[in-house]
Image 1 (cartoon, rainbow, N blue to C red):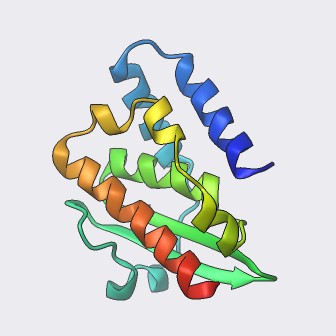
Image 2 (cartoon, one colour; image 1 turned 180 degrees about the vertical axis):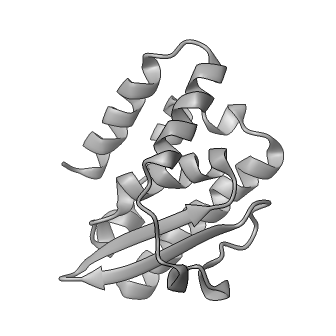
Length: 136
């Protein structure tokens, strides 16, 4: 699947819910399904700066594609990073750098986050793009 196809899949999943509390619950469930990362990945260098909660993002490149693993100590934030990992893991740096991240707007996530969580979301996206630029 392409990035746009995965994004549309996420938009379709979130469109099932009409209330934001249900969407938050879904985000929490997505966070619970995020694969556990090793303790060695939970190091200072993998912490995303600008997030109120602690978010670790690890990137590795294999055969020209970036693969991300992540974790957070906050349940909603863990759900948010799980969405980003789902969209961007297994993509080439070029694909990541050229993506527009419209699905965040389409599901209404940015508008329904507290200012600190919205800043954290932007920091997560920035870090993913930074890894893509570094590996391109």
